[in-house]
Image (cartoon, rainbow, N blue to C red):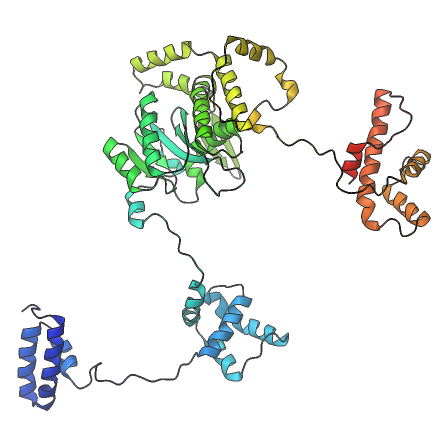
Length: 503
């Protein structure tokens, strides 16, 4: 018979029958048990324990002496902190040595009883006694649920097996500058494994609904269907919104292993070769910057996918400690799509027409212009450059190498410092130093400082040696330039720049 009584009713029944059961003989106890088991549905052995005299409810609370009392726990906490908070198994082995060392240096004084208990305590007891201390102040990480992670298969670096176009890796590049605080612009990057075709989408924030919207936009302009999507473990990817979207659209959704960036080697390489190369590492924030970055990606996707060849690994062989890699001939993603048997002729003809209308100078000029807008932090409306501006840009290409770095997003905005922040200690004695250098050009700065200290006691400290070494180095460079360029300057005089360096 199943349990048809409530828990409260069964407890009341136990209290009623317990007195009868205690005063009954053997046959009476058997009859009471049969009736109680039939009514309550309890197991017979459990019914005997409930009705018998030695039940848990009738037992008085056990009062025992604690072996590891507060004194032992307090000493254990001190020893655990002194051992740099190691685990119980390691601390158990270290306790005899650590106790002796701390008592020998006067850091700890233990009673004999406390010391003996600490030396006999087990590793499991150490962890139990320290559990409340360890948990205090520890903040639980809020992450993706285990069930959701298990619903998304894991894909490693070697699991692709030369897929057809449409298998893409995705990642985020944060344009946060030197701090992750606040809200900043991010770039959603997708890279095709087979061809290297890369799409970049500027996003004002990393959010799951924005990810699905970006995927809808990308799928409209991809020259192939999106078949597989592999991401890292970012919560913006690993969530129910993106998972449901992939299931509805028939996209096979996988994720990489945590803390294994090499599982996404293709998109990680494009993060540096495309996004960081064009945008740099500065901080971008706000909708105006997001719009400017989106316009830049409209030109860069054509420039990169149609006009920028990239390498593709052909084979990798390990011979001992040496790894030999062989690569295919560099080709653009556009060329790899034309050579793919998985792309229809209609799509190939469309790509050819699109390629025929591309002007590389126009694309590069627009990219440089938008880079300048991002570098300047300008939020004004961006307009395309006219034919005259493109002509000037083309003329500038032949001499651009003289300027060094041509990408505005990579140029340093801070000008070199030319002012002094500390008085020049050697300004009054510099003519004397010049005379000594003319008399003995190979004299060291240390010998010059010793000579100054001898002639002017208490005027120069030993800590000023580095400043004097920089000044002497500048003098030697100027003398070398004078000899090489055959200058006829009379003497070297320290200017403001040299003085600032000396400071």
